[in-house]
Image 1: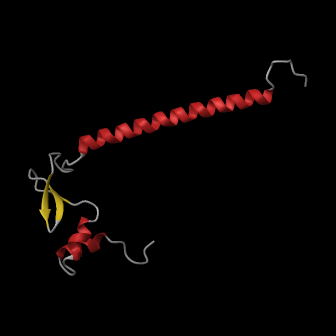
Image 2: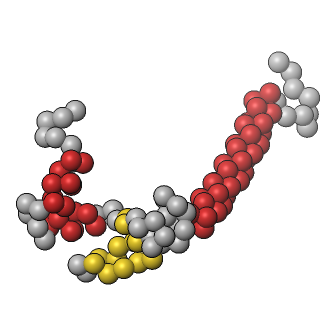
Image 3: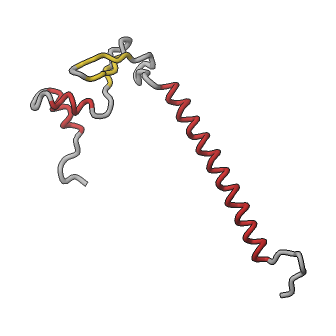
Length: 110
């Protein structure tokens, strides 16, 4: 294969095409990430501290040392991750402990 002076070889052309494609891929991924982050922020602003039942504003109320989210419009009470377990530590065989056991996976279950 003869090569004209000053003209890149096919291997060089392929290299620069791959480099260009990789740059464009990284730019596209960056735009996608920014878009996802913006969408997550928008959804958080739309839903944060809103009642999942009626959509009105939740209020934080202290209960046994925890900040429990309460909706005074519909009467809903909502717990963050770990708060139910924290409440049941205070009572080993009470109602809250029994409710929590409904949601725990059985030992040996797949």
